Length: 191
Image 1 (tube, rainbow, N blue to C red):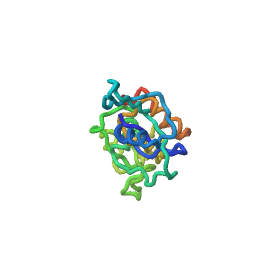
Image 2: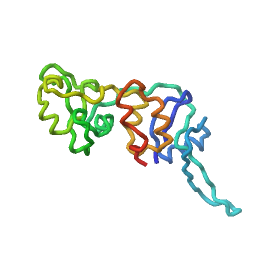
Image 3: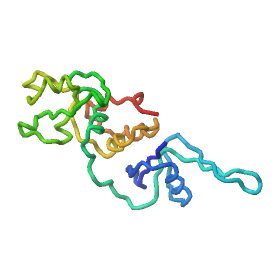
Image 4: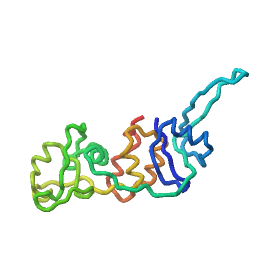
């Protein structure tokens, strides 16, 4: 389990290990906990025969400087296919990662850029059929509008094993006007 570390204003900062989270607790730097998932770490025994225990929440807000995480989400196939929920954005079928390709909606041969808003997941069949044409020229329709992930969507893309309470927190901040969001139900979360 990875713990989602937030800053004191509630913005995601990092996915951290249980050991790193325990360090924040031990240093008394955890300001608040969210979510209901707890992981208990057990330590040594005292002279009365009692074992120390530390209950770690799956989401912690920590003391420190309030900063927005810098850097954009890198556009790579792993994040792109995850953003698109492993669906071909033309035929709508679900595929394994190895069966998907990155399609440039406006082909690069026609000046299209390699950016989030110009890329979509496509199965090999649909991508080969589309070739170096626009979807309109090929008679295809995108099933969702491509977008650049926001900070919360970025943290969703970064972790493959998100707990349900972490997903509820992140998902509550996903962009509401995107058709993409409806494809991401809690049943797709790896636990």
